[in-house]
Image 1 (cartoon, one colour):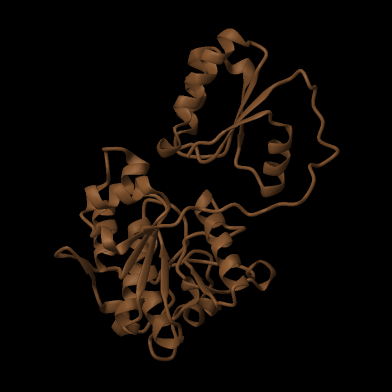
Image 2: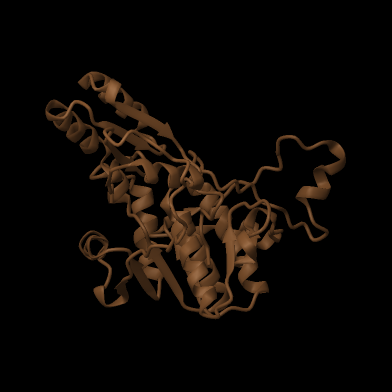
Length: 322
């Protein structure tokens, strides 16, 4: 299984969804090897075997092989430069006896994300040659090169799991290169899983994928039998409305803020909380100030799982962003 996130390395719902799936699949008796771009430590409770692509030596032949889709060839230029390495460790860490080298794969969501996904794919090919497995399962476009490479090397079926599309993230102002990667990946896949019927419709209508190869599998909920923290207290008269999710276009945070302003005109005592982080956070802070509702509106930033639980416990209403 190829994924860009896994708890505790998460920035949104993708890692949480991957955790839930792996826990359910292992509970059914399946063995899962989860390949992350970069990983420190061990998987929670030994749930899965975790491999960091950044620690996989890639032979020269794989380094030189270009990645291609839709007639466009991408050739990664591999630099030996790395921060914080002294002379003694330099060759030891970056070069093997056969000229293999470790690739710079951080797993971050940065400007170099497409190049990272290509390097991730090269490491995936090496892993696929060395491991025995039955099915390849890849989550979202960052892992598509990896899934395709593993399929090419092994001949095993590739399942792509679509949690979000470029149209969800960017509206109509899509990044064409990411759209092309998504479309190419779904064309190459043996089967595609969409998290909703809406997502399936977009895949068919906007990407031209054969509907016969798409299944809808909704995200599930991890049951939590724990009782609310008895130490969490608030004034019963204080009403809290919660938005919790990435503060980005596809989650509609601007609608939540505009709705809050409408509610406050009728119920000025209500408190609104926007929990999470994302690219639209600064813009949303400015919007709250523009509407003059800052006294009733709070931004928490990214929260840990325990902090999320406490916030749910004190909230009276949760507005689900997606």
